[in-house]
Length: 484
View (cartoon, rainbow, N blue to C red):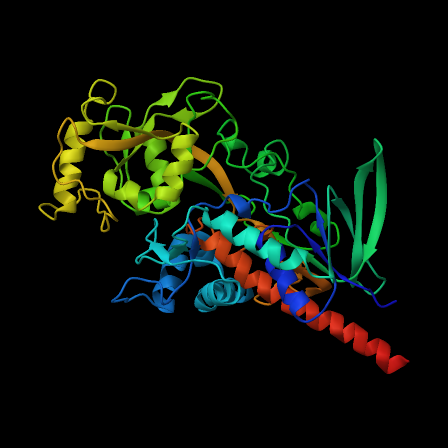
């Protein structure tokens, strides 16, 4: 039987990107989304998407594919260093594909999809400013995902069904994936249905699976808040049909999730975008002392916060840290600041008003101002201070401040894929009819992901998965014509 559609599981950026590639070749798509609203975690992304070199980067621009590659390898760390043979080659191929196609991914979004990516910031672990976002009021994740949703929803070959939980991947006798089984609730009863066709899985990671996969692979993270709503990890669905997994123990704890004064012990936090630090923001302990290069790798900043800041004795594991910006940094982040201040997560105040609350902040600001003005070198090695403009620290100097704490954010581990987005089994062989892209996959980021590379991997490998699934589907159709 020749299927009538390609099935895409998940409606985040990876799934949408694959769908656009499929629809562009006039191949019908059935998208299954387990929640009631599409967009996944991609729609919440707040810092942007990496790409190098691009026309949006600051001029003169010395960034390159090679520099981006080196930063990614350095960030990946031990898993790449320790790998050997075919495993090392596979990981290297994934990284080379990601960085080599990053400029094309930015062009595809900006030129073909009409998305503004004109603002560029330098995030932690990057040697250049290469994380792109728009100049408007929409966060980058929302802007990108909502635009792509608009592209696909009007196409007659596209059908999305929400509230559908995929429970099984179907395989033929020869091992080829031929569809999915899924459930949904209708009239208070659970309905089980099947759909047939090649499958692209883009259902995300397991950072919200606190009582399941996260508890299994990283029990030490219990009690640390998350940026993820509860969602069951879907890697086991692929493992059931023989897919291999890798790096499942590598979970990224992002250094900055906002502590909401209205609900300080909330288990789910709003992310304080890394762009806040990239544009000049600094981190200070509860007493006001700076303690880290804010643009170090995420794992480095998180470790410093946990080591040097006071941990609150509450049910949630949280640390006493403040994020501080001046007016220059705030002006470069108007879209972010508008949302955060509306939510009460960041407030505008003055140095004088903060004196009793954060006693040593005045001295920390004076030292940082000297760094910005190049009177002294930063004692923590920070090289870029973004758009910080404060040159004299007075009691009336206006600043913006918010409480932040480390939060479970992203899972680097997942199903094993190759550079063609094919899902591999335990022997390193592709499982026919099955592709994966985005956070469901593992092996690309090693032990630490660079900020801005999550959206990038969704676009790069989502496009590859879509094109590969299209070719497979067209091959099936060709077999039908040949036999008729």
